[in-house]
Amino acid sequence: MAASKTSKSQRRRKPPKPTASGQEVASAGVTPPGDQSPPGALFSLHEHAFHHTLAVLALGLLVAVSFFPATQAGFVWDDSTLTQARSVQTLSGLREIWLTPRNIENEAHYWPILYTTFWLEHKLWGLDPLGYHIVSLLLHLGVTLLLWRLMRRLGVPGAWFVAAVFAVHPTHVESATWVIGRKDLLASLFYLGCVLTWLRFVEDGRRWRYGLALLLFVLSLLSKAIAITLPVSLLIWHWWKRGRVTGTDVARVAPFLLVGLGIIVADWFYYESIEAMSFDYSLIERVLIAAQSLWFYAVSLVWPANLAVIYPHWDIRMTNPLAWGAVIAAIAVVASLWVARHRIGRGPLAGVLFFAVTLSPVLGFVEYGYMRYSFVADRYQYLASAGMIALLVGAAAHGTSRLPGMWRTGVQAMAVGLLIVLGTLSWQQAGIYRDDITFYGHITSLNPDAGHAQTNLGLAYQRAGRHEEALAVCRLALRQALEHPSDKGQNSWVQLCLGKTLADLGRIEEAEQHYRRAVEIRPEWTTSLAYLGAFLVNKGQRPKESLAIFRNLARRKPRNADYHAGTGTALANLGRFKEARQSFERALALAPHLESVRASRDRVLRDMKRRGE
Image 1 (cartoon, rainbow, N blue to C red):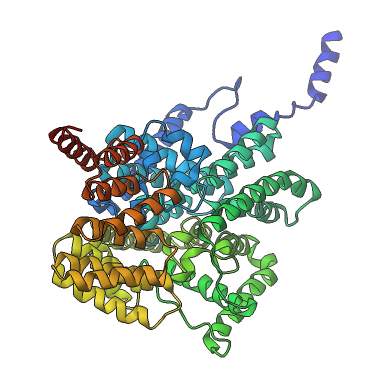
Image 2: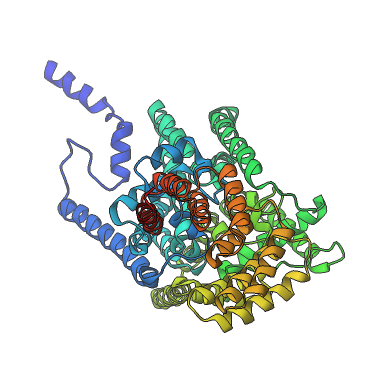
């Protein structure tokens, strides 16, 4: 009887509910502990791991093949900031990178993470560009893998293909191949790591994940200020997931925003103290710039042809109908996606908002120095492009999933073809970073009005000993500069280009005229003074004037070894060998690697010994 009752009780008893951890494991395709594994389960798990490994290797192969010319590239453009940075090249420089960033010549931002990577690499392979390019490609691959992981977590259709398109897209060549452009890679790597950590924090609420996410956000900001948009992106994700943003969401994100604003404001004041500038654009003109910039970036993602690195300024007059058309079209897209969100989902609008928000710091509302050359740059959309790529690829993957097998196979073949086309374009674009002549020649072929590139092309020809070509290019740049007299920087720079080229051709009087004209245009610019001083020293002319120039420069920038070396050379020309030796010793104390300065110091010592001093 008792056994009968027990039996009825067992029959009435409901099976226990699975635990949360059991549900998570089951949803991942793995049998919860304690259950008996079905036949073939272990094999399926290994097969999944095998396919995952193949997918990772395929992304790595895409990056390696598409960007292979980067391994043969040199240092171009602003890479000189790295190659000339004493803080990167000395053991004590790491402290300067973090605590006294002003010691990094020609760098107006506080980006210690970027220069720390350069400092570490310099200890491994000096200034061999190959090592720097390989590290940048590995970082680009790391960003690609994190993006794939994020797309899978978000359930975006075609997640691997999103990452594959990101890996080989030609607009990413600038960030992945230009060495100083590594700041985009580092900022994006920490940014995506922060987002993935945030998703886990929202799931389990563990405080250490929140702290880790905040740390990754700070590291991203210390790599490049573009990461300031991350708190807004997190709120976009919350809205996409639940259709609303709660007070708890805002409270959690608020510390990120406060910390980010603190870092950005400090960086802005630092930038203004070094390179203060103001562009006379009204608010309406800035809106027109922003709208056209957004469409430029969107179009270049879909049709990445003629990537010029430096693009022409476009017409922003308020009477330009195309500019207003861009504003209206941008508003119409957002409004349409908002209205259609109940039918097509919130994903498309979230992708567009992420794209626009991530680009917002470089749309022209805030001053930044590159606006003097162009309103847009390929590198600016490196991270932002992930939102648009995810939207386009996800929509295509969702649509093709309903096609019959034969049609789906055809679409997959087209997808492979797309990767081949994008990879080929990236290969070609990466090749322009081989050297300065190739790089600036590419820019000027697509944008002949890029006076800055024309001038740098002339200097590249001059360094290569192709003086007649240098002279022709510099004269063309001068004609362009004279059309914009308000741009004192460009006018002074082209005068230096002409002075240096004419000096190499032996046309000393003409060269001196251009050097002095450069100083006259921009007397506060230390570079123009240094060029004039070096010219006078090298030609042995006016030693007292060259001494005054270099002493002035050394007072203004006492940690610049070149200025102390110039002072030493001017003193030696005057026969003041003891003082010259002291100046050379100061220069070597700042930059022990400068063998030319060491040789000059040794010559002075021999002269002193010969004279019995």
